[in-house]
Length: 248
Image 1 (cartoon, one colour):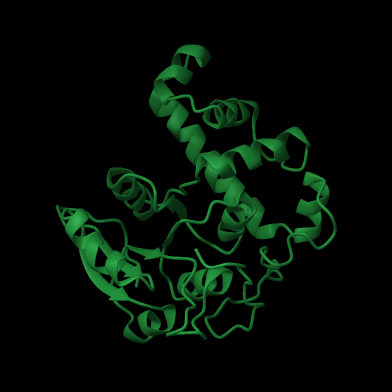
Image 2 (image 1 turned 135 degrees about the vertical axis):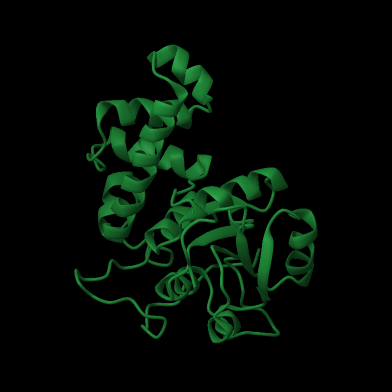
């Protein structure tokens, strides 16, 4: 189960859920400073074992010929987060609507399998510290929603930081342009990512489709339906399973 972020020199505890044996076996060797406390081919096995972890590294595409009934996508994210874990999705998935749907399902971070291992480790540490890690593709999507007045909960300063991140600016570059310290900008960005994550979790697919000019039903295969206020989330909840298309 999740505990507060590591303190006093304890290594960050990580669990890997991926149907690819090479990923499960290689990550501990590639990230020796982390404590890998579990490795599983599917969510069902992980939830039975209930390992101690600060972060769960979760692949999106877990169903295959060997485990055709394995939960994946939104269903897997919701099951793991409902069990009390913080989830960092680690996938080759590039479709920005699918990545945004992961945030809507409760994921705390999104990292591409093409990213350097240093970026993965940094993201895992950020997720364990309570931050939300959003990739560039989703940052661009968020900026579109802000420009179309679909996402109106951001302050002017937060919008400025969002605009800079959407254009690939570093904190140092934004600091010079906005005349604010890098630590202040990082604080604004943490607020942006938290607000965006909460917004996605409350958003119905029809509202997002309308805001982005998509056709009715275009997102139904990807977007989780928001839970009614006060509804407890549980791994046994029978949400629509995610039809992911071709396996990646």
